[in-house]
Length: 176
Image (cartoon, rainbow, N blue to C red):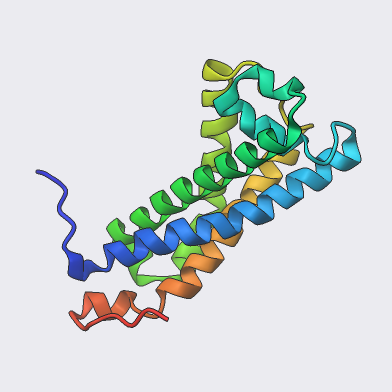
């Protein structure tokens, strides 16, 4: 049976809100990663340069033209954050317990952050980007759970609570 999402389900709002809040959550995670990198040795901009290496390859890690590498790294991190946020929003639109429960969305956020970390650093990086530097100890997982997932869950729960129940009742939504 094909998956059908009716516009009145609020799916578009979930998707857009997830993407936008994903970028915000990605900023909190990015700042945390930059502070940790600055304090532990690789340098404040190391996470941004590492993100650029996802599109530039390992050459980005030693690039002389840092401004362009930093710009690309910020864009890559924002795009990944928006993409994962949109996916989180889509889950909110499709899973009834999330669609109907602000608390459910909030509680699933940290689990989602752990999933994002696992997909990135346990699956994609070793297979596709072996040059990518890893975070010290559990710092990367901690950041993804507490500062991406939890923030994403809280922000999406806050924004979506306003019209999720209206969509379920067939009433027009009010985005604010």
